[in-house]
Image (tube, rainbow, N blue to C red; front, side):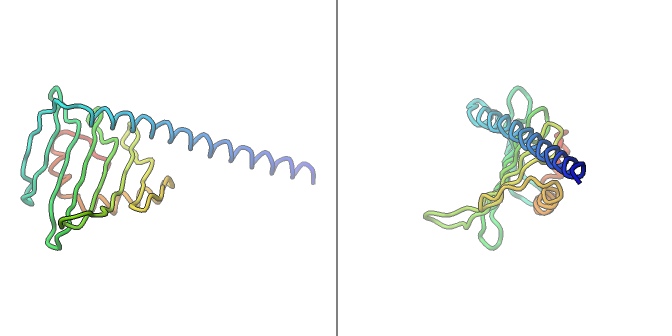
Length: 168
């Protein structure tokens, strides 16, 4: 009986350590993403190249030294909702994405903002929904990424023609 208890305690300890290690790995990635995001948005000397998507809404490419650092897509849907997608790139791979949806009217608005965090290999590691709920479960992350990419797939397909690595 004591042997079984020792084995159970050892297994609990090992699982706790592995969860903590995974969590600290993700936190390290998030810390780097926040640093890269701040640097990307602090840059003031971007060349901005605007192209019209096949759906006739603008796609703005923020370019520094011939390298795309950020892409912004904005459009207003028939229901007068403003949609915005910002993709942030490092080494030609998306490391962070912000998807915003808001009502298109004058005055204060409360946009719904979702955020996607990717590691250096383009694997999603965190999703934050519009209520601030953090998701790091791999299965749920894949589901959220699929839901999101379905909405933007055609526009993003045009972007992928630019030799940029996208996570879907």
